[in-house]
Amino acid sequence: MNLLQGTLDLLVMRALAGEPRHGYGVVDWVRRTTGGTIEVEDGALYTSLHRMHERGWLTAEWGVSENNRRAKYYSLTAAGRARLAEAAAEWDRYAAAVAQVLTAEDGA
Image (tube, rainbow, N blue to C red):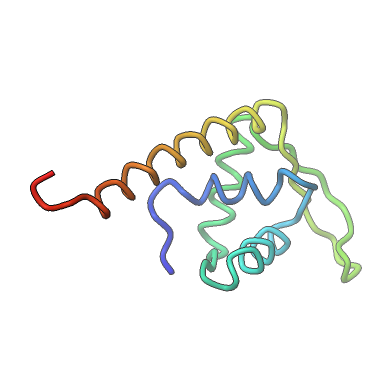
C-alpha cells in the first residue's frame, strides 16, 4: 500500500517511540505492526530520518545490530515526542473527518 503524503514521519516516529531502532528495525516494525500492509521504501525512510534529525526530533548514534553489524540507531528527542503527539492528534482528526465523509448519507 502506498503511503499518503505526510504519514511517513508519523509512522517512523511511532516506531521509535518505544526504543531506539536502526533503519531496518523501523521498516520491520512498521511491516510487522501493519501485518505487511504498509511497506516503507529505503530511500523514503532515510530521507525522513535525516529530515527529522535536522529538525531536532531525533538523535542518532552508531551501535552494533543484532547481526553484529555497525548500524546507526535513532531515538526520539523530547521535541520528537511532542511532535509525535501533535502529528498523532492531527492524524486522528483527519481520519475521523474522512470517515464522516465516507459514511455520510447522500445530500447530507
